[in-house]
Amino acid sequence: MKELKKEFWKYMMFAVMGMIGLSGTILVDTFFVSHRLGPDGLAALNIAIAIFGLMNGLAMMIGIGGASRYTILKSQEHHHKANQTFTLSFAMALGMGILFLLTGLYGSSWLAQCLGANQDILSLCTTYLKTILMFAPCFLLNHLFMSFIRNDGSPQLSMCMMIVGSLTNMILDYLFMYPFHMGLLGAALATGLAPTMSVIIAMIYILLKRNQFHFTKISFHLSQMKAIIEPGLSNFINGLSSGIVLVVFNLLILKFAGNIGVAAYGIVANLALIVLAIFTGVSQGIQPLLSRAFGQGQDQDIQYLYQQGRYVVFIIGLCV
Image: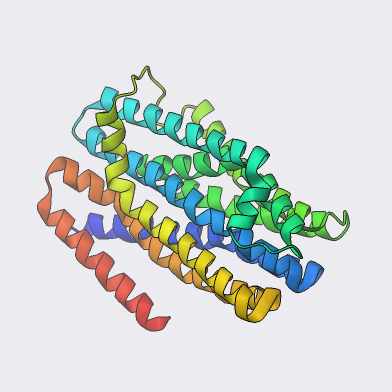
């Protein structure tokens, strides 16, 4: 039990730090956009980032769901099926990423209007959405690789991927928006290149053959896809619900307080995302250990991890 406790704190702390770094990506955008473009730019950003709720929900559904299934199969010595789970998860994430990319190319203006952008900020919002969605495959694959690498026994690398992405976004935000004067396009490019850097790190990890998961031949069966989706379905619902709440609030605030009201709400909402990221980090940190214990039938370990996780989030909640 002592070794399990050590693993719990190791995985949980790395996951929390990584999620704080990941959530900082939007917060950094908020900071630079508010100073550089004022209320209209910040309102456009806050309306556009509602799409992140859906995109992140899908990404975590496939990433965490697939990684959970992978760890269970691996702990049961079903290595070929575990590799099939990784390959199918990769294909699903890439396919959904391409769908988002096509939506950005051909429907970003329509999407901006659906999310609530008025004529004053429609062009800004459309530019941000189109640029961000061009990087959608990288966003989804980034979540996938982070989840599988964490479940592969490398929580440090998973954390480093998130922090490197956040630092990349911070540096490029400044360069694109100040010396290069690229406006909201620069902010979107910086945000899109952040997960691209993380994916590059993951590919280097795979090319160096440090990973235990591998690509293999697969066939697309609904039962296999269902087995991947089910463990991560709650993550999708959380992401989707947060996106819906953001859209509803934006629409109501636009009606009663205009773009300045949306800009003000955007600051509060982004601060709230950091708090939520901490709770998400706790759950993501203990997930590999829970999946392993479940696969091995270690009920006592499952109960211990669950209780420890409850205590941690309760204490964090009180502090917040």
